[in-house]
Length: 272
Image (cartoon, rainbow, N blue to C red):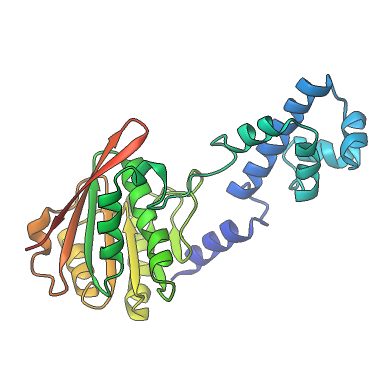
């Protein structure tokens, strides 16, 4: 893993950098949203009014409102205490506040109990190659990361690594995966070439690669790794068809993703 990848991962996980990363943005959005809601309940609020309600200096509240610093958990809780319970739930459920948690138990996938059961069986396997394809990038990314989260739940001893092109600002990231902040083109290729050898050397039991393309050369590398690890290769640009993985000794599966309104439908094919 190169130094750029390390810094990017550290920024996201810690949320302490001066750059407005996802954690800082969400806390600020939530604070502004709660302040607006309090004004609906209590009438117009000046900074001194708000300071008296939640016990924070008005200068601090002004900084938080304008995106400087990060609102404290205690201040957020005090704001929420002043709202009706139903409004607290509605506000926290807004997509700008709580990211989606991709998992097999999420209603987007859990509507098909048979498919979920089959996926859990696949995830219990020690190795193999899983191709995930579909026309909708959001749906493919959701399914790929659902497999990552659920793999950790199904096999708690499983160590997870991998690369995902997307910025996890709308979904909860899988621990161990490096997210490449929506990189495209040459920068994306460089990140892959720098990180992939280390991932292969560590021989993690679960490897996820999403949104990085599926060239023949890369697919061959994934096939080799799949002889010792469970490897998921996902891409909305349709990776090679099932015949491309028929020679994997440990077996392979092709998952096709279909977005249908508020749910995702999956089809699973097995390499014979």
